[in-house]
Length: 54
Image (cartoon, rainbow, N blue to C red; front, side, top):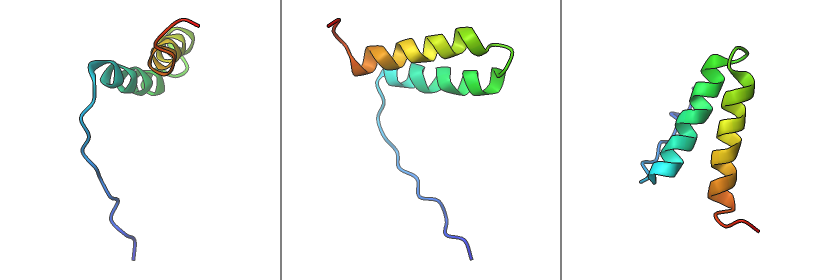
């Protein structure tokens, strides 16, 4: 009845893996670790999207 979810394996850089781990840790810790872990994940994301200071 339901289709099996498709999975894809991808190679990640260390920074991308850190971002995924930070997001997972944020979700696990909510609401106790909310401000610090969210800030950390946002900084990692910003560093990946904007690698150079503009």
